[in-house]
Amino acid sequence: MDKVTIAELAVEGGGCTLFGQEIEGRWFFWEEGSSFGFDENDDEEIRSWESERKESFEELVPKDWPYFHPTSIHPDFVSWFSERFDLAMEQLNFRGNERMKEIVERRWRRIFEK
Image (tube, rainbow, N blue to C red; front, side):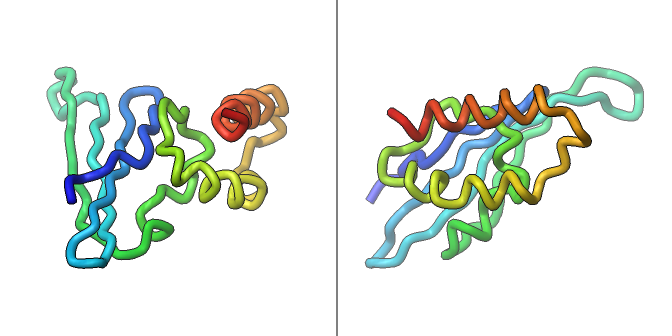
């Protein structure tokens, strides 16, 4: 089976795409992403990466995933994110910034309601 795009998550300065692929009845998951930054000479640099493949989707997803902006979530995985959203939000530190917390909640709830 070809690789499946599970989620595209954006964040200021970059983002990541989570992929899955079924091979001989077993699923494997990995992340490909990029980030914008500066090198040691203060030159702009885009860094790209690809993670190792894992059999556990939960191990792959960044621990702070609600901070990311979901640009797309595969319909088969919306429930995975939805079921874990409240717990993930409890583990984040918004440092009393209720406005930011509301923005994060609103952007994810839109995905869950589609």
